[in-house]
Length: 243
Ligand SMILES: Cc1cc2nc3c(=O)[nH]c(=O)nc-3n(C[C@H](O)[C@H](O)[C@H](O)COP(=O)(O)OP(=O)(O)OC[C@H]3O[C@@H](n4cnc5c(N)ncnc54)[C@H](O)[C@@H]3O)c2cc1C
Image (cartoon, rainbow, N blue to C red):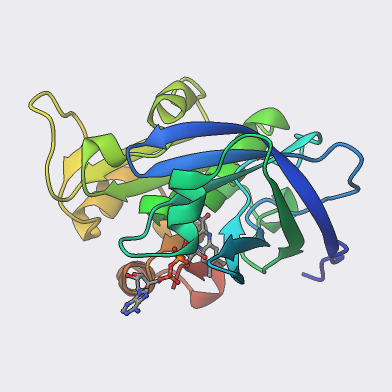
């Protein structure tokens, strides 16, 4: 399918709000007023982050849906010993300005591509998947069915936890969480890594869906081989690796 490319824009934008998502993750809400910026759900921008006299250029997926015109949200998880992510999650304040360029990327979804989606993410890999879910909800795409399989180490690290709980009220959206390292006593989700048993139980009509995989490179490759082993054609799998 040939897609019209969205024009790449470069602009400076002010942080309007800093939201705490988890102990290691923040969402920065940028002002888009007066900027003619459009993108497809799933795409990312390059953010320029001043760091000790240099400028680090880092890719961040867009968290807010394209239906939200006045603000752009990026969700950043602190990488242990990381540079840009530490500045963005620990030092950035409302009112600061950043240089943004984008949108980029082929990891995107539009309704014409297919109506049955399976979104599989780990940690900050939820961000472009959440953009897709937010788009489905805000554009009222009730005919689209989406199943999210989301893996985290600990309960406290589930990004967008409350919003994901609220998404469960939509009959066309299913959210499945798993925790790999620790879990609270009353935990009702899965424990351990996403595996064949989980996919067979939670995903309907496995070969017919479009699959979006996002997270650390090894996670994405493991998930891709898991679903191809279950009979999914490689052409139906899109991958975004956060390396
Ligand atoms: C398309 C795309 C989209 C992305 N979207 C998101 C997103 O939405 N949210 C998000 O949180 N992230 C996202 N990322 C990841 C993001 O771009 C950064 O890679 C991440 O924030 C880490 O950047 P950093 O500058 O903090 O880490 P860096 O300073 O670049 O460090 C990266 C790693 O190298 C190690 N390291 C650093 N310095 C050294 C050293 N001297 N010796 C040994 N090891 C070292 C660090 O421990 C760390 O693990 C995305 C990546 C891609 C490619």
